[in-house]
Image (tube, rainbow, N blue to C red):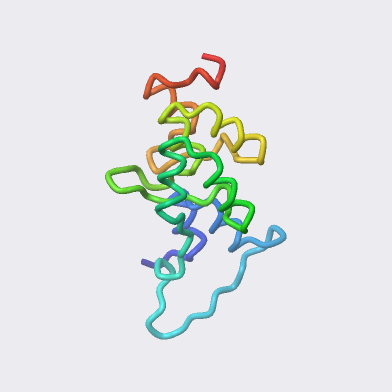
Length: 135
């Protein structure tokens, strides 16, 4: 595609991948090996058990994943969902205020946008579930 892995990650809303490719503010040089593409190097994934927990309001499952090294703002594409989704967006859109509060307290970035350019607050408002955002 002619794009670097970091550019593809950025365009798809993969915030944690972009951070991984930019350690200390610089650009990480990726090896150019035969058969490897930039898109193939993007492996920022959230286990189904974890994103389902965000969708269903199961705070303990999410906390355990983060505590074991899971990335807070890693993005993913749930089935029938929008790319660039974060756990915060999924919890917010489903009205799980306790999970949203816990994610924010742990440092989730509420300014990240999904592939459609929407933040967690905008997703919650669209779903009529923005009580946690002062609505």
